[in-house]
Structure formats: C-alpha cells, structure tokens
Length: 64
Image 1 (cartoon, rainbow, N blue to C red):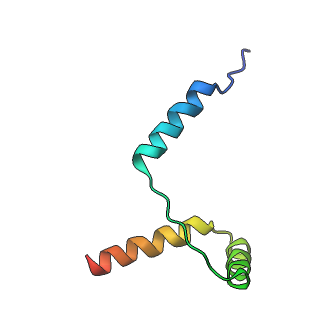
Image 2: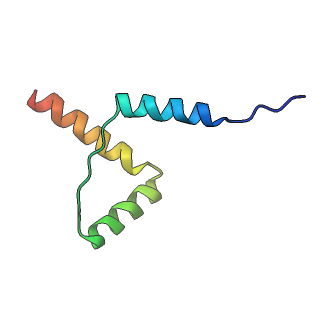
C-alpha cells in the first residue's frame, strides 16, 4: 500500500488560506495569571484559544 506524505505545497496552501481568513490578536498579561489560566485550561481539557474565541464571539454579539 502506498503511503501518502505531506508536501511543502500543501503546507504553503494551508498557510496562504490561514493568512487570508484569520487574524491574530496579541496581548501581554502577568506571568502568574497566564500560568493559572494555562493550568485551568489543561485541567478541564479545553484549548486556550477556544476560551478567547468564545469570549470574543459573545462580546461581539452583546455589543453589536
């Protein structure tokens, strides 16, 4: 059976798509707060990004 492998082209296409569709938000927070946040996310089994995505979606819906 022939095994498929990922190609550089595939990675480049995904990167171009992500750049077209997504934006990044960056901010700074105190290390202690970030460590607590990461620990809680890990303990309850959710991604850190999902917390921010949910917050932003709720915020936009509320203040639209």
